[in-house]
Amino acid sequence: MILYFSAGWCSPCKMFKPVLQEVASELGIGIQYIDADQQKDLVSRYSVTSVPTLIVEKGGSVLFRNAGVMDKSRLRQVLSQFR
Image 1 (cartoon, rainbow, N blue to C red):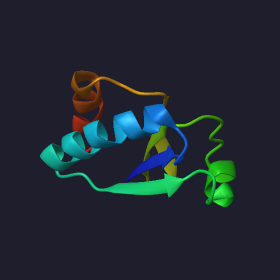
Image 2 (cartoon, rainbow, N blue to C red; image 1 turned 90 degrees about the vertical axis):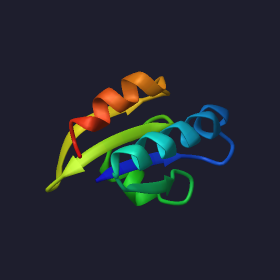
Image 3 (spheres, helix red, strand yellow; image 1 turned 60 degrees about the horizontal axis):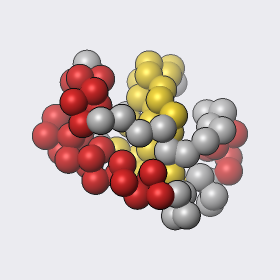
Image 4 (cartoon, helix red, strand yellow; image 1 turned 30 degrees about the vertical axis):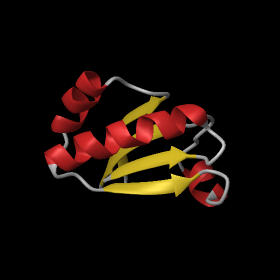
């Protein structure tokens, strides 16, 4: 599962979201969008300290974590490992 932590006021989040959506769609991977301002319990649970943060989780284990934006090529490379 891909968890995408963002916030409405975050410009990098707004820039990265369509890139993430495009790559995830290409790879057939679902995304759970989490508003960091409204989901404080999940922010705490995953120790998110900045947005955007992308987490790939499987079976309760975090397999990948990235804070900040990634270019489309790197994102595709990372996510293709988890489909």
